[in-house]
Length: 431
Image (cartoon, rainbow, N blue to C red; front, side, top):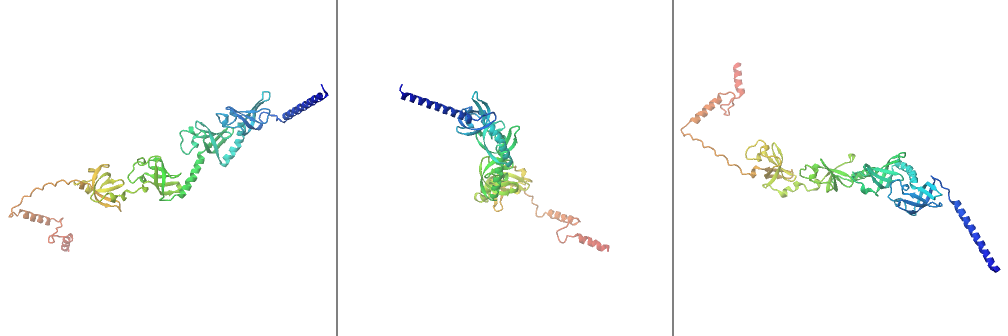
């Protein structure tokens, strides 16, 4: 072998030796930079892989750590992807470490929970409104993840009753912290409180903007025995049963049903008691405005007996228009009371005698729609002969009988005598 080849081989051996030395030194340096971990340590890392039941994270250690799905959140997850994604920076707690088996178990839930308690306490003290997504629908309410498990009771979800919460999973709620018990790991929240406050603020603003006489569009919310509550843009007003229609209404359901769109007029505002009185009939043409167009004196029409009184009967001839049939106009024969002939709800034929729209009065007659019965024939009187003066003699005797009675005052001037004259005569004799 030539000297030149030997020199090249020796140079290569030296280079390889140097490179091995550098690599070993770098490895030793890298190993010296790896932190010593122990259970309970807090570390930061980056998610590098997400499986269904776990996530892998690089924390700069000799090997990657694993976050089981149960350690990702305080609420139950269907898969790890619901809590983290690749590339996400996370803060973790060391749950278990075994270098011999290269096992490093980490928890995101432990760190989130520890931070959450202090944050929640501050939010409850300041009555801050927070947002959270519904993670679970459970018996009695909803569960949200706030770093700790938060519970929203069913009665505190909405202002109205909710029968089925199955479609609430994944919804975002605006909540207020109502109760915290760290020892029992309990957090109670309410969305209803937030909605109630917003409703009250909105109601006051609407009340301030309303004016008596204003006509609005509304939605029937619920029916009661005394009327219907109508939503007029975030605030409810009452349409009393007497304001449902121009005709008499027994039940609100005769006129409207829940969900109906209606026009209403503001009758009265009572901000101190949060009350608004509304009217449906005030937005409609009144029945008396049509009376002159639809009826005239002399017309015969069909009506319904609405009320009976001692002096007559009130008969409705059109919705909201009642006329009076005086007792003398009910029947051709004499009756002591309308109840002898009529009853409420009965349909009758009536003739219009007079219309006074200014005073909203209509005079009606039932008997004028019926043919009068024939008058009974009068018996002929026996005529006395001209020369018979029996009647005259009887009459004269009758006059004499009255004249002899002190308790009768006669109308003829010559036969009349007052008490003053009679007693005056006696007094003069006494004197």
